[in-house]
Length: 116
Ligand SMILES: [Zn+2]
Image (tube, protein in one colour):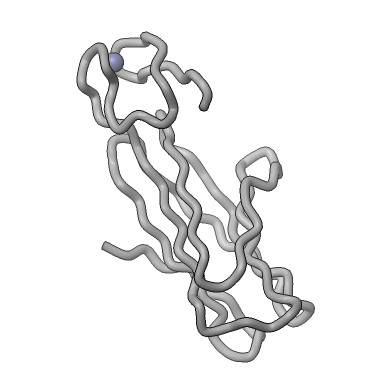
């Protein structure tokens, strides 16, 4: 758990909270779901931030969740040898953002789609 600043009132709050305990402003939440239809040995879904820092390495069928307090860019790629395309996604503060990460054909391409 870490402390972050509420973007509305500027006070410190836990990054695991769903809303600011001081003013009630909802915190943005980002969830990545990975498709579970690929279990190949080389398949890992890698989620990194704007600074290139790896936030999570996921296998098929896993998920990753993080709270954000401002609009944030994420980068998603799969580390198969066939596809190293980086997908950029933007998650918005004050919104629950959900993204599905899939390998579409035998590791040949990856896809990231926003889901409801
Ligand atoms: Zn607040």
